[in-house]
Amino acid sequence: MRLLMLLLCLIIASNGACKRNRAASSTPVPDALGHSQPALSPPPSTAAELERDFLAYQHDDEQPVDHLQRARDQKAQGDFEDALIQARCGLLHEPEDGEALELISQLADLTGDKSLAIDALERLSHLQPDDAAPLIREARLLIGLGRLKQAQQIGREAIERDAENPEGYQVAGRAYLAAGELSGAIAMFQKAISLSPEHGYALNNLGFAYLRANRNQEAVEVLTRAARLLPQVAYVQNNLGVALERVGDVQQAKHAFAKAVELSPTHLKAQLNAQRLEADQSVEEDPLTGAWAPFASKAEEYPLPAED
Image (cartoon, rainbow, N blue to C red; front, side):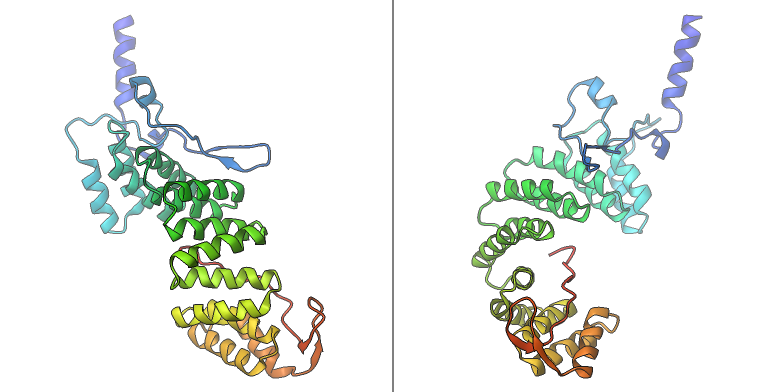
């Protein structure tokens, strides 16, 4: 009887190799504030840990299979979900396989599983302790999920690993900016630009932070540089237009808004800003600065690039 039960267990364990429903759950547990927190642990090492590895798919191949090659092929064909399954199958017996973790992070992001992508990057950062790149990518994903304090922490860790990489300061600045911590954001963007003076996205974000802080002339200066470096990016032109309008340069503001609409005809804020300037040339006191200037847009929510 015991032998029969053992055989039955073995059959159940091996059934459905590499199927989606064989995955251990990767859903993080919400913390007290309702923010989901990833499991921050090093790669599994013992057999028991391998069986519980939430990044890998439990499976039993009847014959040798190159899961990573399958994942590469399916990714190239645009079949991201099945490619992710294969990459996670490949990780089962090689939990420190950097290529598998890289594929999992990319494919999880492409399929919308940001938490899984973060978990894969977290493990990759353990395996590459001198490389800031996994931490920078992890921080970007955390910003997208609104986990801003964690993104700030990961950004600072990236800076500690590579203090000469402007992207570490850029992503940390974005986390501070999204949290409304303007002084921290401005300091981070300024450092990124000191390391990479032609970093158009950092210049745009610094200009955005200056607008939020009502440092409008400084915003004009850095956004003018950003627009020169990123001439095809509509929201940079829109941000420049807002800065120009705030300092009273209405004609140049009109030009910037028109350029933004030309670059992106569906850019609603640029459309509204352009229409408003055409319709209303009255001069009013700016309620934020007390200065007399053409009435500026009350809307101050400008888009931040997802990857910059």
